[in-house]
Length: 232
Image (cartoon, rainbow, N blue to C red; front, side):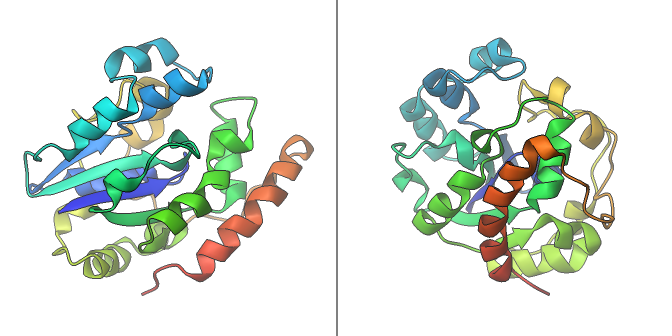
């Protein structure tokens, strides 16, 4: 089985990758198109040089890699919607089980803002979420639901994609993982301290005035997908 897990950044995407990557039958890939996105867009991201050196900077070469025979029965791709521009072909993923991970944009903006001062819609991926979902429909899961009740939600997700649930998905060893991307030292400090999902989140964080317009633009996209999300 090939699983493509689509999301924006700071959406619980790394913890979900760790959950699947801890299954003995699964090989996990961390954002395989990141270098290609940086090369094409010219975006100035933290650790840009290290990312470009760690992966092929060409979309076609990455597609060849991800379509090669996986080393284990389950292949899991952690994918960012904003890495796939409007003209980037998505047909390679039509044979995958596509899943869409969402998170309230107020939480995304607050989390992303702790890593970068300047935030745009292109950075957090919401502008691309609906486009990718329409091209590659599949189950939608909300990170808040996963954190609030991990086992029932992961069981429901596995049932929705016809994958047997494995309790190994509920925890993982602390520290870096062999499948982490080259950017992990900048972005993954919190998840490296974790040994499982962190528990239910509290109240929504306040969004500062500088990012209020960004929240207003992202919120309708999130709400439309939230209404269609997988529920227990």
